Each structure stands twice: as C-alpha cells, then as structure tokens.
Image 1 (cartoon, rainbow, N blue to C red):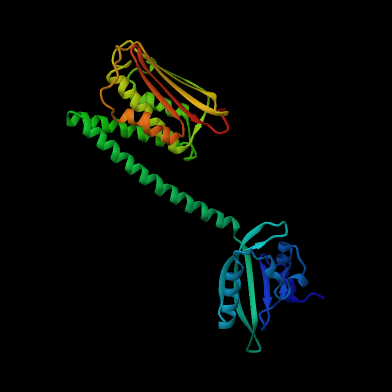
Image 2 (cartoon, rainbow, N blue to C red; image 1 turned 90 degrees about the horizontal axis):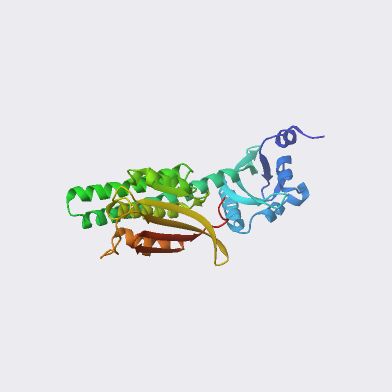
Length: 319
C-alpha cells in the first residue's frame, strides 16, 4: 500500500529525490522516473548520476557532497539526460532533514529550466549583438563626420552632407527594425534611399524580386547606394532635368552558387568624367563594400552615365 508521503511525492508537479546518511539516494518520485525513463532500482544509490552530462558531472557531485558534509542547503543547475536521449537543464534544490531531532539525509526537488536557459542565452547573445552594433554605429558615424566635414568647402555643405548620410544610415536601420533585425528586404532599402535622395522619384526606376539582406550588408549597401545618389545629384543623371537612373537586381549563377547582382545605370545626364580623387563614395563601393558583402563591385564612369554593379552571395537564392 502506498503511504501518504509516496502519494504526495508522486503527484507533486516537480521531480523529488531523497538521500540517506551515506549520501546515497533511496527514493525518486514518479515525475523523476518518467523524466529519466528508468526504474527506482536503476536510480538508487549513485545510479542517477549516470544520466548527468559529462561536462557537469564533477561540478554537480562536488556541490552535492560539499553541501552534504556541511549540512547546508544547496541549489545548482546541471544537465540530465531525459528518456528520449536529450539533455535538459534542471534546477536542483536540496536541503537536509531531521528525524527524531537527528540529521537523516537530504530531500531535493528538480524542475526543468531548459526553456528559461535558452531565453537567457538568447538575451546574452542579443546584448552582445547590440553592443557590437553600437560600436560599429559609433565608428560609422565618426567616419561619416570626418569625411563629410573634411571634404566640404563650407560649414553649410558639411552639415548637409553629414545630415544626408546620417539619414541614409537611419533609413537602413528602420528597414532592419521592421524585420526585427533579422534582415531587410532589398526593395525596402532601395525605396527608402530613392525617397531620401531623389527630388523627382519618377526619374528613378527600381525593379527586382524579394531578397533579404543580412543586417551588416543592408547597412553597407544602403550607404553605398546613397553615395551613388549623391554623385548623381551633383554631377550625374539627377543634376539636370532629363536624366534617369535604373536600379535593377536579379539572381545570377556565380562560382556555381546563387548570387545577387545589383545594376545601377544612369542615362540622360551631362557627359561624365572620372573623378580626380576618391571620396567616401568611391572608397565605400570599391574597397569597403566588397569586404562587407564577401562579393564584388565595379563602377564605370562612362561618358553617357555612371554604371555600377554590385554582386554578392545570397544563400538560398531570391524568392
């Protein structure tokens, strides 16, 4: 006949164990046995330790034995193998108990905290990612300020350049925020850059299927496209009233893998001449962007209009 203690323990919503004066366990409740898929006899003594994760084994037993010797309560986390073979994180709380005023052993209870651990780990990863992004953001802003102020001929021009570039950066971040920083749709990024940079959006055509860009790539690409717009407004297709810009992206086969190819083509502007020096835009497109996207970039200052190509791997292809 099942006693009151066993009935209570077996119906408790937690895993319960008991150990004797010799530190060996002599009771496990039904939730524990269902979790491990083993019998009381298999778990008795030190049998239960066979399911502890190898990386947690020594630490777990050291805490248990140390607390037992000191007659102190303990709380520890370790991984225990479930009946299906998966290791799950348990929070194990143990406390000494007495019988007739004498120390008689320990009672303990365990709960599965795997999901909580995963959430905590996810928060740590998110914090680390945010720290990384903030550092990159500050570095980017510093570079934009240096380039904008260093090449401007007047304070007003410096202010306009810096403001525009910061707005481009902000628009890229908004596009990423819409997808919870998992990435950004290239079409969304392009539309934002067009609205930011072009006074006459009818003169800018964009086309292409859905493609999701990783956060770092989305930011770098947005900045590069904005720099192309700056050049077009100052010297190229958007510096007069008749020029047009066509931006198209498509999937191509490159090195046996799907790549995204973005083509920028200007027409109808004044005759183009290659720049005498390399500003921020040229350094972004020719040097920095290829490293960020693990791809290739070209820019041709053809007389009839600037032509640029940006190519990058796109795992899984476009949708």
